[in-house]
Length: 117
Image (spheres, rainbow, N blue to C red):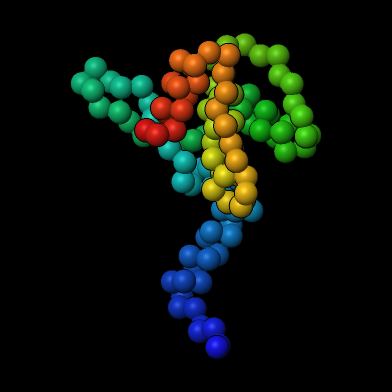
């Protein structure tokens, strides 16, 4: 059986998937949205994921080193950056598994609930 030629749209689709798989930054900036905290009227804005300086440094260190230990302040949103990167790994790398672990069940459940939207 001979494989058929891809259409132009299929070629573009395959190229886009390949680019996303090979470039975390491209995928994150183009396709990942962060849900902001609800406004007073109950609406929730979707914001593009643009890493802060601290997040970008953290992600770059993780790309360069197998293990990274970070002594950091609270609320620098490392969990957000880590979650985005783990989502990318799970989405584009077969057999990669990710777990949400915390010292207590409630914080872990809250982080997991954010994944579900």
